[in-house]
Every structure is written in structure tokens, then in C-alpha cells.
Image (cartoon, rainbow, N blue to C red; front, side, top):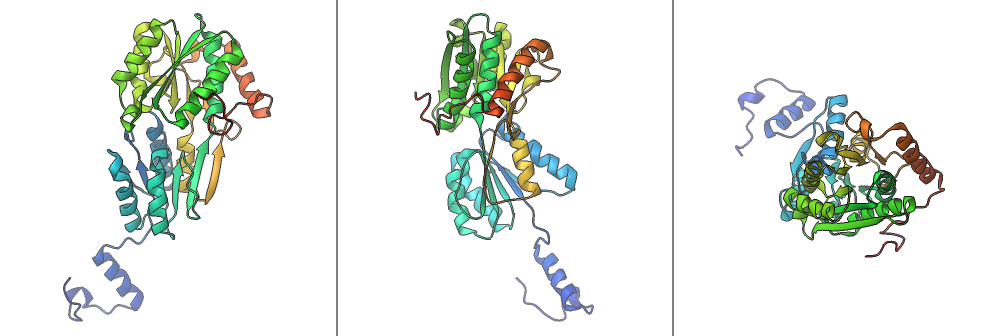
Length: 336
């Protein structure tokens, strides 16, 4: 850096102290307004699923406020700590980690920047400067499981998960409970795509697993697999079967094939953090509007009024506490 000189042309005018400070800040490139940041995980912000829901929430906040945010898309597992640290060093706050896989990295970095506000969607990090947002995926999955059983003609339905982890087993467990409560004799086929993070973005493998389940007689399949689900939905369309999307409303991906989508309002979670960060843990279920099933023009013909009435009754009973949905991660249920 050049030595500071009083005869520097930039300082040839007479500045008051506040103006001088502002001029120096601009010269040094120091941001005057704190920007939030969003870090999207594997699969990218246009994965048509979990990450993209977070992106929609951030863009809604941007549109409403006219403000901007920093962003980064994780492309491999080694980038998480570095991405968080660099955002914190740039002065971003709050910094939102989209996805449970960022929990350990956030646990590490948030300790080093105690005055920075952090948030994580889909995991819990117990630190005073972190907001954790969790969902009752088992409740939403129960509803779409019941719906699948209501429309199944074969008495056989399927579930395809992404990475084989407790969180995805939570989806599976809720789905099975809803299907079996509706039809105790129903058969539920289950496959997981893999055991590494690549399982979230493997549509070819998703399509293969779906075809295998259809060959066994399944006529409805629920994919909780991120970008891998795109292959599942294409396979369902090709086979003339039905599919259920996840996280974002994916009905538009294959209109006439998508029975519904189990929406997980990651968009609402990200938007709310940007609107007003709060430390601690929030858990969003059916009652809080955090999970639901999607009904729109793309699946309206598949969901006649009588079916909608039955599904809404199941949803209402869960909200009212008449139906207790076991949580795989908390209730020692559906252990596989």
C-alpha cells in the first residue's frame, strides 16, 4: 500500500473527519452495508428441489427489499468450511447454510466468528450465534403416503431416497406409516440411491431404481432424492405410472405424472432468516406451514374433489393431534 501523504490528490479538498473516513473506506473497498450470504449445497441452486427452494426464498427477499446477497454453490465436500469462512471474513451476516451436510463446517466456523450471525436449514447447530431451522418431514411424508395408497390400483407403492442417512429414513418412515394406515395390506418397495453425496444428483440411477420398482408392480413412487428424482419422474412418465416430488413443488416437471409433491418450505425458512434472524431452533411442521402436499393446475386432474377431501382430512387429523406420526429420528420407529 502506498504511504499516506497529506498532498495525495484524493485529499486535496478539506474533509471533515466523517467524510475523510468515508473516502478512505471507499478507496480501500470496505463495504458500508452488511450483506447476507447464502451457501447452497451439492446439486446447486437449480437442482429443482431443496437448494432451489432456498434460492426462491432468497430471491423473494431480494425482490421485496431491493437488497442483494452473496452466494456460493458447493461443488465438492471439501469446500464447505472454506466457503463459510470466506463469507464471514467478508463481513457477511447472516450467513445461511442450505442443507444438513453443512452442519459440521458451520459448527467449526461459527465458533471462530462469534459476532457473526449464522443459520442452517435442515440441521441443528447449538451455538448462540446460530439459528437452526428443522422440519417435520415425517408429517408431510405421511400425508403423501396416505395419498399414494388411496390412488394405488396394485396395492404396491415405492420410495426412492437419495443418500442413505437418518434424515431420508425419516421421509421413508412417514411415507410407510401413511400408506399402511390407509391400506394395511399395501406393499412398500424401498431403495436408496447411494451412501455418498453424489446420490443427490444421479438421475440415471434414480430412473433405474424406479423402473425396478415398477417391474415389481408399484404404480406410485415417492422420490426424496434431490436432483436424482428427475430421473425417477421421467421413468414414471415413460411407464405410465405416478410419481411424488419432494421439497419444491415439482408437479410442473412432469404434468399428468406427478400425483403431488411433498413440499418442504425451505423457501419460507430462508426468507424468514433474511427478514429477521433469530438464534435458537425452529421446527416447522404441517401446523406451521413448513411441510404440505402440493395441489395446482399441473396435478389437478389427478386429484379430484373426493380425493382431496380425504387427503385434507388426514392432514387435519395430524394437525389436531388425532394422528400421531412417529419420527424415525426421535421415536425409535421404522428402524431398518
